[in-house]
Amino acid sequence: MDATFWKSSLAEIEDAMGQVRLGKTRVLATSAGGREIYVVEYGEKDDFSRKANYSSACGAGNPEHYARKGKESKPVLLFVGGVHGGELEGIVAVMNLIRLLETGEDYRGKRNDYIRERARQCRLLLIPCMNPDGRARLPTDTLIDVPYEKFVYYMQGTWKDGTLCSWPDCKAVHPIKDASDYLGSYFNDDGVNLMHDNFFAPMARETSALLGVADVEAPDFTVQFHGGANSEIHLYPIYFLPQYVLQKQQAFNLQLADAYAKRGLPFTLTNQLAPDAGTISSPPFNLTSAIHHVCGGMSLTFESNMGLAAPGIKLTADEILDSHFVLFEQAFRFMHAN
Image (cartoon, rainbow, N blue to C red; front, side):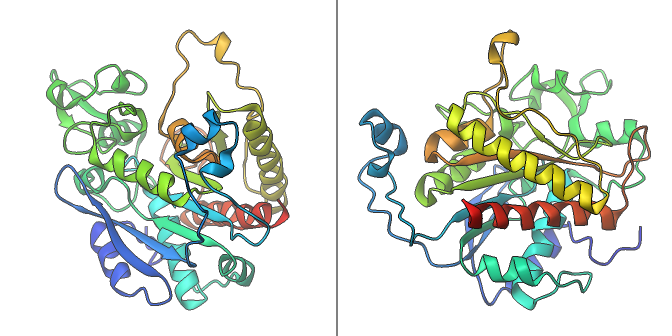
């Protein structure tokens, strides 16, 4: 694939961080493998007059004890790429968003003045790659046109006997490091899948750092970017969220469906409003759920098409990036309207 805009490597992230001028770049944390995790900040942080953490504030019956947000407060948005280090699409998207905010154009030379203008009215936190260990383990800069079995090998790796460690069985052992022969890019160097860490006593410093950002920044709108093989683009249902949050997330989901239809991009409208945990024997409480419970904001998992050489829908690199920019634009529109 010849696409100069497909910036997904750790070296390219490092280089881009050195070119940030309008935002502020800092090292959020160091990974289990000793690699730096960067966050880029746009917009000054408002003072929310914090007196308690979110849980305690809710226990007192008033979330404003955690974050007092008035009409004058800037919306806070948190976009996170590379929680699974080999899912490159979100990394590429966040990198191109940073480029747009810095220069007025993404790496393709495309403008989006609406996103750039709305971003100036927000507090925006951008993490290109939350799991650099997993990204370092992936020996390619794109998975477009990669066969499905090779994709599984790259993502989840192999068991000790050499057989593929497929989804969802890759979650049956955690941390998985001692049970694997080849450790896939889902995991940090300790074999932890950040999406399913122990959130009440985090094993991974990456998990703790991301939840710490959510706690300190009180984001209104958080999106983690994941890859969903060759599926239609969709928001993955999230469990254990309050009904009013699910209602907001379903409203955004419907807004997304309309936006993708207008662009001619494939989108599945999942039910965000009432994921019935009672119909599942063990409904997952994952990293997306945890983010809400430390800050009270909307928390979404975005599943991108990956353009594999596999059955299903196969988008091009341009279409994959376009699909993320649809999400970015609609997120700003939603925050402006709400």
